[in-house]
Amino acid sequence: MKKMMLLLCCCFTTMLAVAQNKSGNKWIWGPSIGWQYQSGNFLKAAGWGLFAPNDHQYMKVEAGANFTWMRNQTTVIPEVGFTYYLSDKLVFPFLKAEVNPYTVTPKIGIGLLSIIDLGLGYGFAMQTKDGFKPLQGITGSVSLNIPLNFHLQ
Image (cartoon, rainbow, N blue to C red; front, side, top):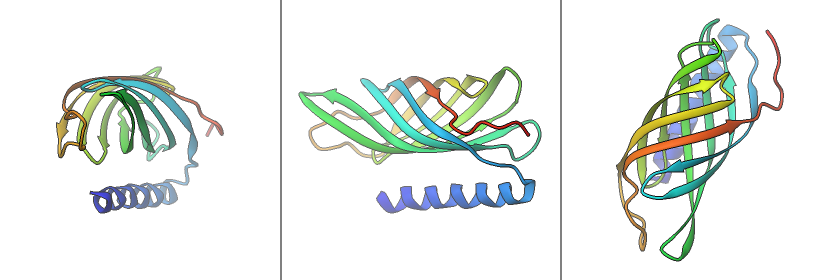
């Protein structure tokens, strides 16, 4: 599973770097913090990079961790995600995929200038962590993305 996550991360990074070189666009990057419900409440913290492959859409790659307190234990679950913003207006509709060692979660949602994201999706369990409940089913999330190097093209 770790090898699969590393391979996905490398593929996304390579794809985005090639697209960035072709388009000449710069990355916007920063931290994000959020909340997600998926078989329980999670605090999400991540670092992300975003760029525009063309004049009307954005792509974001993020890597972080989900923190929770369930079954009398603190649990930290690493996660990678890829978001494709379909528009660059005030409200950005998006498609997103998140992968962690236990779940694959496709999502749809809207972002307010890609700073506040509201997502809804379904988590498909791949395996269950020992002593933990399965992470699967309907999921909802809210995240705040803080750009640290915002620039106008």
